[in-house]
Length: 194
Image: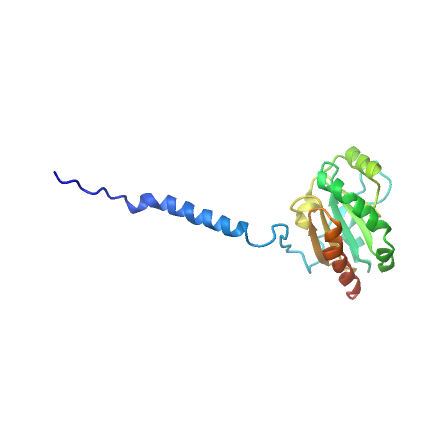
């Protein structure tokens, strides 16, 4: 009796080959570059059009894209009371709000409260302090989508003409402030004012 070799049809191997190729691609992407460095399509472009009211029941004003075109560098910090990393970076934002160097440059710090309950947002600011000159409430998250927010916290450096100069993804650490954010702020402050 002669045993015939059993042939595996080529099409039966196709799913396995596709899986191996996809796994290889994921592995290469996993080890290629800094995962916190996500590109932003808005760098160098005007901030999106938006108008946000103040947090309901809070004192102060909301803000809009027009407020970002007043000739001063503005930091727009996206935060929420439910965001644990926002609590971690908040002392640094408080430090930045009092920084004489930033004050001399005319830098303003605005907050964009993302998908938050008004009472929780007010409680967060009351508990941790208010580093913001203005806070806009983005209850539905529409402005965050327009800004290209991946998650909170994120901070944008906006030039005086309303164009976005830099995007900090994740909480601001002392290292990120020193090595990335401050150089971006200083460069934006030197840019021609609109």
